Image (cartoon, rainbow, N blue to C red; front, side):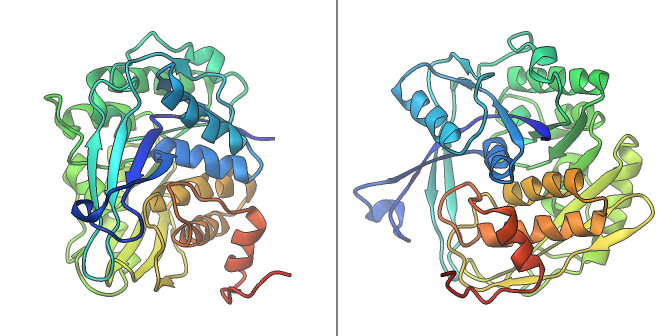
Length: 344
């Protein structure tokens, strides 16, 4: 069984029921999730030995977050039960021409106050096949960035494959450092890099010419080859660089695909029409979880990419942050069966 370790923050997500606006609601639906914990849940669903590392307060709300992970068969033994509070984010779900809105409340959370030296990374990564982090963690605080760098360096020294989802979040970089000050030193230790067009531009100043993310319709994967090549040149350790391709026709209707570049070949996945999106939060995380599974399971980059795109397509049908699907369900969609017929 493959062992994968993810590092980041799981949060309390509070959302008005249905498609209500914040100003309309008198109650909030509760979900626990976060970029890295969502990947951990996906991999546990696929049968991997999935470990999530974080710093979570030792109180009842923190315990609820840990219980949610345990319920999904994620190993939580390396979580530090420390810190003042659990991070929160509020989500107003958009529909049709109204986009979703996120408000963060993460100051002084357990992960925001983490630092280097708090986690015994050699013990955590013992026997691991893969370590995954995202650009969300170093955006929270300098301490979180330092802990992330410590983890990456240890994984490199131990021969553990390292992946990153660049995940640019404008609302989080508030502690006096710009992404360009922090991210390059972290990403240089990565073997697999995932990012979309905004991530590449905001972190490293790279932008595919002629691409408009607000353009209605599907996105041409070949237009991103120049950016993927530049990323690979900038970070020569990376064996594979990948981007997701989202065409936003409306908040409820997106096209979805992805491309992978290995230095020689550009692999392109099929494009899915997602016409009645239930919840798009966690779409990139579900892609990353599917990609890690595919790269560790199939000796075929094309099949791994196709698995990632299909897995993420299914996530858009599921309420909440995490992708609660099985390998069989993903492979069924990969085979071309998108009928949605009742399984009896």
